[in-house]
Each structure stands twice: as C-alpha cells, then as structure tokens.
Amino acid sequence: MGLVYNVYLNSNHRIHGCKNCKTHLATDEDVVSRSFRGQHGKAFLFESVVNIDTGDATERNMTTGRHVVRDIFCKQCRHLVGWKYEKAFEASEKYKEGKFILEAELLIQVH
Image (cartoon, rainbow, N blue to C red; front, side, top):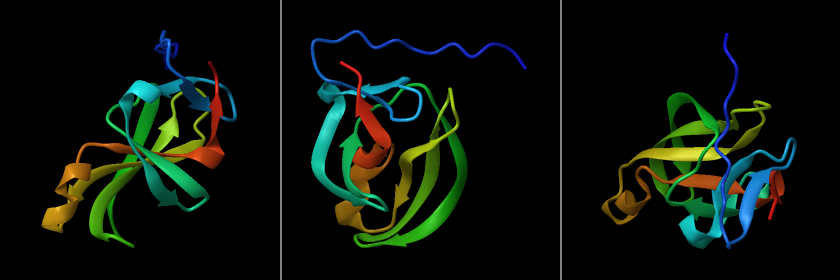
C-alpha cells in the first residue's frame, strides 16, 4: 500500500473538512443545497467532494424515495462522512444523481 496523497483546497470560501482528522473535503462554492437531513441531522448536498473513498452501492428507501447510494469515507482516516447518490428512481429526484451528501455533524470548518 502506497502513501495517501490528499487534495488541498485553496479557496476564499468556507472549506469543510473531516471532523476526525481535518482533511479537506469540499468548499462552500460546491454547495447545491443546505436543506437536507442525514442520520445525524443537518446535511448539505455538494456538487463535488475530494479526498474520499466510496463503499459498495446499495439501494435505500429514503424520505424522498428509493435511491442507489454509496457511503463515502474520509480517505485519510476512513471515518464515514456521508453518501453519494448513484441513482434516483423518482423523476423529480434525478438532479441528485452523481452528487454528494456531507453530514454537518461529521464535518468541521477548516477555513
């Protein structure tokens, strides 16, 4: 196993990081919506996220319908930070496909 190289985000906007190890994950520039809920409460929908690994795809019934999602983990410390939407079965939910949910309780503001 080789070294883990992380992406360092350089932005004038707020940078969200892993609460456990402070590895950069996303910036406020990539927030699509702040009105989501996760298992731990408030969550954000992001267009893109860095420094993550994904779990296996699984089908879940959520409050907005059935989705295929993958849990996402901090690449540095392997802590769960949210999930990625792979597929939405409802037409009104298709905009979520390919986007990421990061749970506020699992994040820390790095900058």
